[in-house]
Amino acid sequence: MLVDDLWQRSMSSGYCSLDEELEDCFFTAKTTFFRSAQSKAPAKNVTPTAEEKPKAPTVQEIEQIINSYNAKVTNCFVMKLNEDGTYTGFIKVHLKLRRPVTVPAGIRPQSIYDALKEVNLADMTDKRTSFYLPLDAVKQLHISSTTTVSEVIQGLLKKFMVVDNPQKFALFKEMQRDGQVLFQKLSLTEYPLYLRLLAGPDTDVLSFVLKENETGEVEWDAFSIPELQNFLMILDREEKDKIQQVQKKYSKFKQRLEETLKEAGGKPG
Picture 1 (spheres, rainbow, N blue to C red):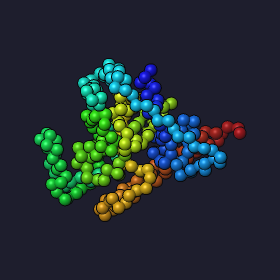
Picture 2: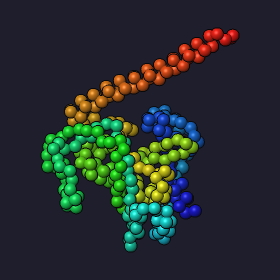
Picture 3: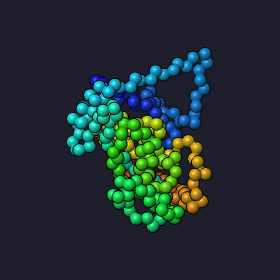
Picture 4: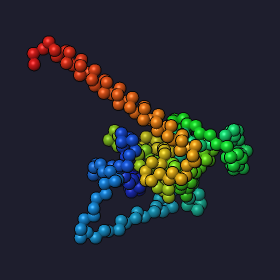
């Protein structure tokens, strides 16, 4: 089928398991784990071949896929094809941020008037404060097929009045494969609505997640002194929590071993 073929083309081999906590690793099509730091030396006498880019679907093919997509939609969030060949639709983004975000202090919530007039409330004050967004926060976005990942990230930050540098965040697509939850970081130039269209409306097949951008070098210059101090406090707290988790884990193992030894104490070896 056309949709399945395009969907397979859009899937990259770079995935990271949830169990690995999004470390710098990726899951290849050969089901082998590699660390990004362990770059393999190129083979000698091998001429690299340029990858053939997949052909973009025609307007007729897009229309066919949209009709198939809308037939599966169980709510009002359908996609609409425009006369110029672009299309609009909805994507749902889950915000899974483990660190606090910076927002303007003492600003009233955004009104419908502000949204329609595109009023940026963050520009009304220089005062800043930090707080944690709920881990289960979800935002529904109405976007176009020409909307990039970069624009989605900036739009989300604007809706939540987050004034942090957008480079601190990354958009991931979340998928399930062989019982594992896999994440793949999307490049800033990809088009989320196109991925949504190819995957279909089922969020179990594909969902979008906004997380901290923890791959590559951290641009510390983008942080203010209070933010850096706040990060130190958070890292200290995370370190203590991790120590407690490890101690609790091995305490349970030790208890089980002692119980097993006690039960086997009266039995012949």
